[in-house]
Image 1 (tube, rainbow, N blue to C red):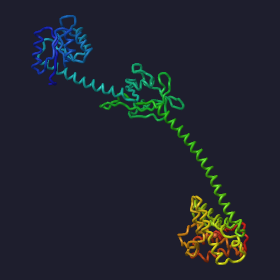
Image 2: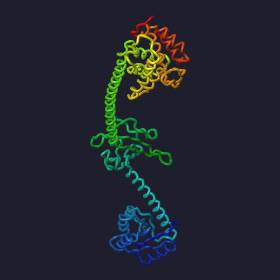
Image 3: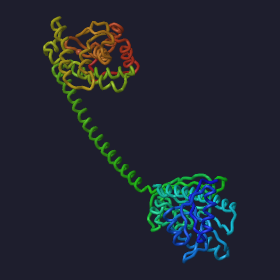
Image 4: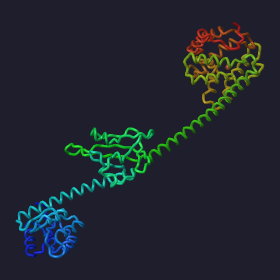
Length: 483
Ligand SMILES: [Fe+2]
């Protein structure tokens, strides 16, 4: 049995009413109210809200059972079972319109009453569940922010949620029953060529489909709205196609945001390009200033020492060639060039008479000359070079076996750049005239470094130097040679 129910009995015959109430009580139901007229039935039903009403059709007064049931039906959802001794066609038709849950023709047996009540209560509970489910479905679709359109298998519109109505400009009541293509018109964004809705394909292929390219929706009043769109077939529990559902959204704001981001990005890119160009100009200017400073330093020392005029440039040239031959990274070549160009700048501290003395130097004079790497270091360390130029210049007279000056460094303690300049310095010096002797020639210079390879000089550097002259045919520029 369905759960015990609260039942209202509307019957103008008191004896029959009592008899029915008695039967209902015996079945386990409770009587929540009775009425003997249509007017009374309406007020008791409204007040008591029974689970079920047993309604006699023929009631005394102006309002009969069918009218009372209609009025109750219009206000509240309460299932009604009619009780009547008359079942003519007209009455049945009137009663049918009030959507009753059953008829009992008087006189009826207890079994008939029992069955009618059970069926009515069960049907009502099923209807309530269905109403609930429909309510949930409808609320869900209505509350979805995306636009939803549902069609039958003929692509006729069944439902449009408020978002879909707002974006398309079509009201649900206008669109219902219309073909989808009439309401949902889309065109290709750039060419404005009409595009088929993914709904067609979703129904044809029975799979979910997405729009592939950017499209515009033509609204009811002709506006064009960029949309994203997907559609899926609706297939019931038996696997049968019942229609399709399409979900789409207005992406105007997203498009605007994307355009704004692109504009900001382009502007940023332009600024970066401009600033990079400015930085490059500034860097070039700085580079030129540094080159000029180095050149000035080189010229300053060479102006005091005519015999070594051009010496530093030639040492720098040779040192770079040796470094390239050795495969030294390209990024280190500017370090070698700059250090080479100013390696003897400390000679400004050596008296001109000593520098230009046309005879071998005395031990004291040589000691004074040996001060020039340190003198250069003291000047250069104050300049913020991006490389250790001051250290390299300081070390250009150091030798691999520790016999050099000023610190007696050995092997790897000496910067590679300083070792390279050291070899280039000796070869260039012997190739050129000196106040105290004529030029000895490049070959003498190469012999000298070859003799010292492994002791005074780095053998790899000596080998590279020999290769530069002998294989690559390197020659010093503007050198008055003895060769
Ligand atoms: Fe030197």
